[in-house]
View 1 (spheres, rainbow, N blue to C red):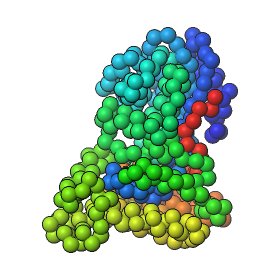
View 2 (tube, rainbow, N blue to C red):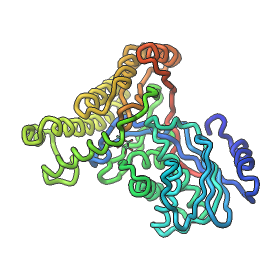
View 3 (cartoon, rainbow, N blue to C red):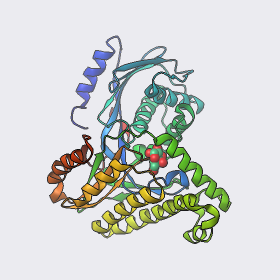
Length: 385
Ligand code: GLA
């Protein structure tokens, strides 16, 4: 467990928040995720390669009669709803992630009983490391445990995505929920988003350290920009008469470049080259060639910046500054883009210097206070007890 989230302190926090709860208190843990490569490929039936973070959302929970009561530590706010009929709440977005999972479980035939839930954790919010999928998954595990129902991780991942798409109303792909639910310690997870097949890819001892570089630039245009990119990809797939861009080749987009138009052509080129980069990454990781892996990270960034146009000034600056630093093998923006986080791969020997030097340089260039932290490939979600 991360520091500060041992079971004893979670228990104490729960008892302080819900003094009338009869217990016993159980705990679900669901980590954030960092996608090493394969950005904006999931909803195009492509490949992604995330790791689960050693930073997580914890749901401490216990059964109760009647409603579900929730306390969200990060917001200092509570919620209460009827688990048999969860309704959308337009005043607090975070609450819909909890209610949405109860709703999706109900749709799947799971009768979610009453309960008290305390949500806490150390995943930075709104930063591109999937705190939302972590909240969904932690709540899903808690509700399933309260209902006494077992569900395979991939089914829970699909259910959480459904909650986010249909209840919360965010049009995300499947990467985040799969990463949070199915990653294993010391491995990246290769997910084929067409077949939903997964493979654990070991991060050998010689692997670099991965850093999350949070630009502190809010992701203002993320939702509209994201939906627009999806629509552009879908229109290109329709043009080729296939379900997703996964079925399209480089030759086809070159041949139809004029018909697609420059913008859609470049969107396609990003998706196709990004899928190629994920497959190349598997080879270079297997060979322990982390310098080549770093070049793939840089290639991904420039493709996201120039072809997919989802980067922003702050993301470009933090990646450029990172690349100048001793021992940095490569850097790229991660997640939906338009702000939020980037990541860098850094040789172990250079780790201390990296964070200490990059933060003031980024601050000097942008006036923003970045959050820079190293992460480890941790286990996916599960019940702690
Ligand atoms: C967001 C979505 C994911 C994925 C990424 C881009 O994080 O939630 O499903 O599409 O953007 O790779």
